[in-house]
Amino acid sequence: MERLRVILAGLGVRGRHWAEVLRRTSRCEVVAYVDPNPAARQRLNEQLGERPGFNTPEEALAAMPDVGGIVLANPPIGRKAQIEAAAERHIPMLVEKPLALSVAEAAEMVHIAERHQTPLMVGLNFRYLAVTKATRQLLADSTVGQPEFARFTYERYRDGNRPDLNKYPLQMDQPMLWEQSIHHFDLMRYVYGAEPVEVQSRTWNPSWSMYESDANVAALFTFSNGMTVNYQGTWQSGWSVPNFEWRTDCTNGVIVQKDQFGALHMATQPAAALTPIDLPPHELWITETQGLLDAFVNAVMDHKPLECSGRDHLQSLAMVEACAISSRESRTVSIDSIIPPLFS
Image 1 (cartoon, rainbow, N blue to C red):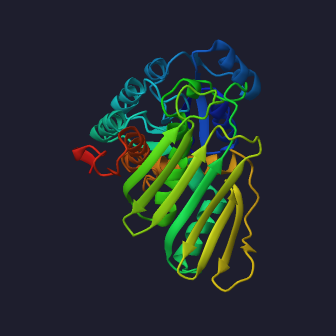
Image 2 (image 1 turned 30 degrees about the vertical axis):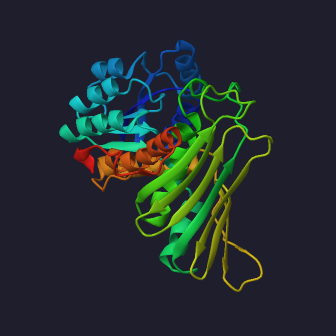
Image 3 (image 1 turned 45 degrees about the horizontal axis):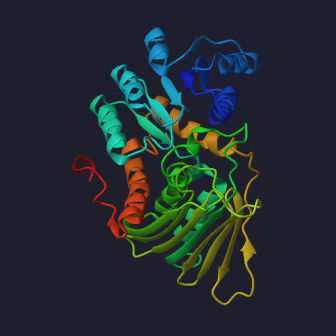
């Protein structure tokens, strides 16, 4: 069986998830590790086998011309040069979200990849959760009718000083929006099959927050299909026990997800109680990442349509940036106004 030779760049928390998934995948072979920390490279060599190590993706790409793909699991800072290096060599890219920390910068990267006709996929792994697929199927089957409004609640005390979490969000601007809400906003677009039209938002930081910028987000979105979604998210909850609930009210019932990785329920309008929906077993951070990698390999090796493309990702990033602008300027913001003309 032909195997896709892959460079893995970024060996932090998320990079180690990728290393494990790539190790298990018969259609891929990791040929190099990239990380500026020699200890991180050595740890992967000891766990998964010796591979050439490099400080930067550019160094790895220059030294290994016969690779078939690169996974960028590194922070979303300074990626433009990395995208250029891969695109110029026509090396397909799977890049962790967010692609960049502004829509304008992300659009530049998408333009570079498209100009070189090189696949650029963004790592929106939550699309590949079984609970996400089941929710889409319930809506497609019209089991509870057509969706009209929703409430999405995500409450978490994220201790940014924990050794198993990336540290850069502690200093970044709008960490909740760019690092966490981006997943949630993308899921809204994906599950409802509609694009956002406008948003009213407020972001703020509680007094006890360890983050330099806002860890709380409240937003009210309207979508092209008439949906209204009320969003509340925090990384600095006043309670250590996390809370997740995504409730979608439809013309003949509700769909309720009570855990970000599962716990899906539904009820028709006259029902007295929610009915749980059976879901397959899930290995945390691995199962959905495997689905994401499979989609990437299918696009590169089997020439199937590219999912989670960079161009598509711009719409979700625009939701993030629109929230920040809405809060800063105290006004409703059109999502289309955030997208560069070339991509609108």
